[in-house]
Every structure is written in structure tokens, then in C-alpha cells.
Image: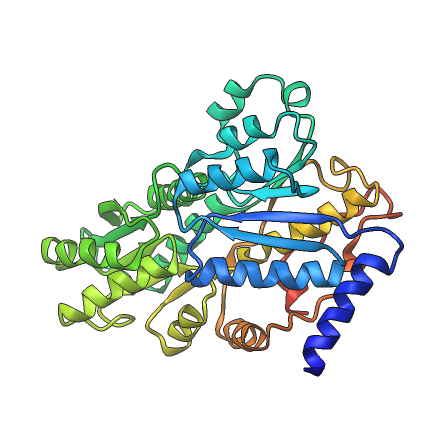
Amino acid sequence: MFKFLCGVLLTVCAVYGSGTQAASVLFLNPGTSSETFWLSYTQFMQAAARDLGMDLQVQYSERVAETTIKQAREALQGPKRPDYLVFTNEQYVGPEILRLSQGSGVKLFLVNSALTADQLALLGNRDEKYPNWIGSLVPNDEEGGYLMLKELIRLHPPVAPGQKLELLAFAGLKITPASQWREKGMMRALREHPEVSLRQLVYGAWNRQRSHEQATLLFKRYPKTSLIWAANDEMAFGAMQAYEEAGGTPGKGALFSAVNTSPQALQALLDGRLSVLLGGHFSLGGWALVELHDYDQGVHVDRYGGRDRQVPLLQLIDRAQAKRLLAMGATQDYGVNLRSLSAKNRPLSYRYPFSLQTLMH
């Protein structure tokens, strides 16, 4: 009861303490409400909103693009409009959401998957047509895909001259920019390593069951596979299950990699079942709220690093960091004073310190 009352008081203070109403933000979460990555993403956003005194609402689309569009239409054209709408370009929904926003008065902010070059070209003059689209924040997905394969290759014992390392790759969705960029990064690393042969790239749709079915067939087809690159943790676990069912031991017979710092992925890294893990981009939504809070205070988003930013959030996670992230996730206490990161009244040379290091100080 005491915790509940404290929560109520914090909310009341946030809304009325400064004499003005708290800025309202709606985040259209493209994931499912049971998906560990998107739950942790929301968790950090909620912590950020509490710290910044913002009113955050989150709606899940359960990975159905039509649901995202429906939610956006209600938010942008309905009677209860938020001050800010935060969304992703997952499954290419971005341009339709922008179109729906015209005349709504709602400010828009893109996270994770920005518009593609083709989509931007079709939009026309952004400032004239969509003056309320204030910015975007995306992670270093291409670099993430690259680093993941480079580290997998580094950890594998060297092969004899003339021999090949066999690789299987599990990408997310063809129509999601984040997946496309991770795949491009993997291909860049592949070009640097002629001793590695990509046997097959499949699209696991970020889904454990689907990648399990795909991997079951692929391990029969390519029994000498010793490297598995997966664009998220769910697909890595699906492939890992298929490998174990075929009699293999992850981390010994074949090396597995993944993106996302879910508790299960962090534990698998500590147990040696996952050999390479990248993460940090679960914090992106929280960092976006720092920018929106500043914007609400009159700070121009095109200063302090530009209106559309790419942040190097995806990084290799080591065992010490895995232990720290597990502890942080368990307590939901990130221990970061997000108000202190504000660019307000800072010199123009200031850059937002959005990184995993800021979280793990």
C-alpha cells in the first residue's frame, strides 16, 4: 500500500508540481505483450517517464501492422490525442502513420527503425508536409550485425587451409529496416572472411517457433554448420533447440550468437551456450523521452547532435556486464538520473550520452 501511495504521489507531483500538466506520450509498441525485448524496452521507458515527470501510455500491436495503423488512427484523429506519438517503421508502417498525422497537432518521433531512403524520397518535402515530425533515434544495427559475425569468427578455432567454416543466418523480417541493416552488417563481415561460407540465410520473423522449424531442416541439410548468426535472441533459442535435438551441444559443436539482453539470453551467455551477445538498444525508448522532454522545455532537437540520430547502443556484452544487466532487470532499478542528461542551457558542443555505459555507471 505504501508503494502504491508513493507511486500516486509521484504521479501527482509530476503532473501538478511544476504548475503545468505533464507532457503525454503514446508509444506504439510493435512487439507482442509477452515478448521479452519489447517488455524490457517498455520497462525502461516507464522508468524514464517517471524520472522525467511525463505521462506515458504504451499500446502493443502484437506484431500486426494493421493494428499499429488502427492504434495510430485512433490516437491521431480521435478525441484524446497525446502530445507526442512515438512509433517505429516496423513492417514499413511509418509513411501511413505520418499521413494520418497531418493536421492532428500531435508531435511525432520515430525510434528503432527509421524510414528507408525510398520511403523518404516518396514523402516529398518533409518540413512542409510533416512539420510535426520532430525527429528520430535509431541504433547502430548495421554495425551490430557486423560485430556479431566478426566476434563469432574470432572465437572459432582457425580452420585448415582450403577448409571452410559453415554459417547459417537467421534474419528477422524482410520489411523491417532494423533487420535489413543487421543483415547488411553480417554481409560486410562475410566479405572480409573468405574462409566462411554462408550456407543459407532465412527469415525467422523474430520468432522462436519459426526459427526452430527452419533450423531443424537446415541442420539436416548442413550438418557441418559451426556458426549460427541470429538477429535476435528468440530466433537464436529456436535454432539452439533444433541443434540440441540433433544431438549437438551449443557453445561446443557450434557457436551461437544473438541480439537482445533478455534474462534468458544473458544467462545463456554466462552458461556458455551463447558465445556472442549484443545488446543495449532496449534503452532507446527511454533516451527518446529525454529528447522529447527537452523539446517540451523549448530545446531544439536539431541541436546537440541533429534531428535524426543514430546512437551506438548495440555493443558486445561481456560476462561482467551480463551479470550487471541481470541484476538491473530483476530490480527494475536503472539508477540513472535522466533529468541530469538534459541539453537545456548546455553549450552547443554537448552531446547526449546515450549509451549502455551511462546505464551501467
